[in-house]
Length: 352
Ligand SMILES: C[S@@+](CC[C@H](N)C(=O)[O-])C[C@H]1O[C@@H](n2cnc3c(N)ncnc32)[C@H](O)[C@@H]1O
Image 1 (spheres, rainbow, N blue to C red):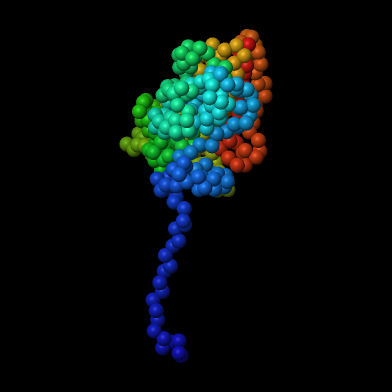
Image 2: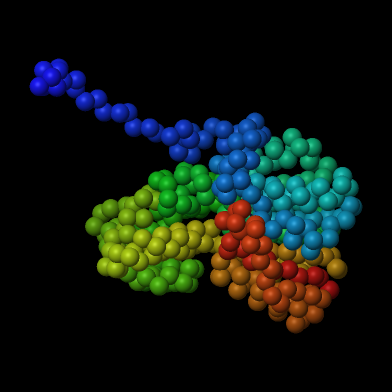
């Protein structure tokens, strides 16, 4: 009875705990300032993640071991990115020699140029060009040929993690996928004009997508009804709906893998990745000095097949004295620490 007489206090809902880590890319103020918040960065890396605005370079010891860089040599880093490999190679030069580096991303390469200059790697030892690596012949002419060369293909973590670039289906953003947002057309624009058959062919040829036809049909039907596939979320949803016929137990995983393949196929297309890689591999032998060493990291089977074939053909023609008959893979420990290393394959060749 006593209880009934007690005045009821209205139940107050507890405020939901939002967690102490910022979740949105723009809020990651500590991670986005790696030089300032070193301990936060180390903590994120120890947990097996890549801090926002940063890229963890892959297979650094294996690359350095193969390239055998000596002070006084001239090298080429075809894919500057965050500059981690460039920095490691510069350190091997010990203040003597020169590295030329290219990247097509104006936003990230400007940041990397500053970061490396702040570390003491200025124009005297490092030349950075906002240029496609398929112009390797021009740069080799200027440099007088290369003793060592690295190409770490694909995209950097900074590009993947920045929702404004549209590389990841996991974050909402414009469906762009260009490495240089100042040139060419975005993936969204490409989808506006491409035919259904060509789109299905693109998904199949660039990424071996098993549901190429179904997804191409769903996208082109959606556009024909007057809609635009202009965000990562819209494309993700279309893929999800297209695969809704799958048994529930397999669906989530298949949708994820399909998204990865479809986004990759579009990225390859809007950046002409196979065309420029083919041109680069054709020009590579003439860019190397006799005895010059080249290492190439690939991240999917299309790239790897192209690189493997070019090196094998060059070896058979006597252009290379040695080449990697088997791929070199990152260690299990590296893959555990950096999951983005898992799909990496390294191939190499030595100019005769
Ligand atoms: C995997 S990241 C390189 C990361 C770098 N090795 C590091 O340690 O930070 C690949 C980079 O290559 C650039 N890239 C891709 N294709 C290119 C091309 N055809 N020409 C020049 N740069 C390219 C991308 O913009 C990206 O910055």
